Length: 113
Image (tube, rainbow, N blue to C red):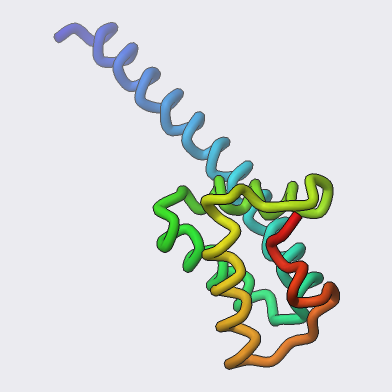
């Protein structure tokens, strides 16, 4: 392998790493926004918002960033997707049972359209 080929290979590796880091920054921002939505809706602490997102992601086998995006869109759309709605309802109910919190929306309207 020539020096030029090595340099080209290294540049390609670095470009891929930069793209991954940029995606991670976007995903992190969306996750932070989703935690804010959950805190506002439930009155739970932000670290519990993170746990709720992880739990829903695992229970639905959905990428965490995708769950977060749905949560961020939830107030504007008025509902979560059907594959996420039940897991979110359960996770929020479980978290509130253990940690308290205050519902800012009536519980029977959580995760419903």
